Amino acid sequence: MFSLNHFIWIGISVVLFVVAIVFLRKYRPPLKNVLTVCCVIAVLSEITKVLSMIKLVPSSDGSMMTPYLELNQLPFNLCSIQIIFIFIARLTGSEKLRKTVLGFMYPTCIAGAIGAILLPTIFTFSITSDQAFTHPLGYQFFLYHTMLVTLGVYIPMSGEARFGRRQYATTMGIFYAIGFSSIYINSLCASPTYIDGELVSVDFATNYFVTGSQDWMMTFTDINQWRLYFLAIVIAAAAVITILYIPYLRKPKA
Image 1 (cartoon, rainbow, N blue to C red):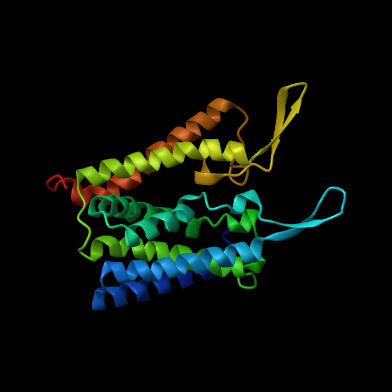
Image 2 (tube, one colour):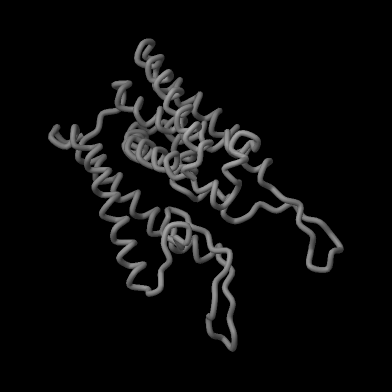
């Protein structure tokens, strides 16, 4: 993180984003067509991630080998979950559902993907920064998140998605519901150790929605520190979503 290769990838991402937005602004393709392209990119991205990160791991007695994808590679991050929303927005026949999904994707694709590009945790948990251009995950990560930023910007630019206070409220609700659920997911994916029925340690914990351990950035020594951190996430998310929705909040209810 914050290595030369990281900064090069940031530069590449910015260039690709600018080129894509200039193209979309000039030709104004239907949002449906853009979503179709995003569906293809999302599927190829996930396939690339799985095939490049899956490991062949021996059993404890060494009698067999099993393909295994580590829990931190499961698609439970905000940006990974966008794959589901992209397909819903592209395939649903319900205009109400489509508007709700697009309303959620607009701020979360932009903010979530920009945050991921600036703070790529793959360099902490998956590959090293030296592998940024030699491992498929580097390409998958930055190209996929660049696509998400582009899509998030084009959703309102296309003129096909009308947002208002209702979409703002549902976006907040969906985001916090998924975010709170990440506490359960992180706990389910962790490996707890019990001695005499008492929990004494947790290993291999995931960090979906950055609500888990932050040992790469800070170390929690008291549960109240985590509670304050969690509150900070709640406030920061509300602020970012509100800022991106400000142009639409004064319009009549959609």
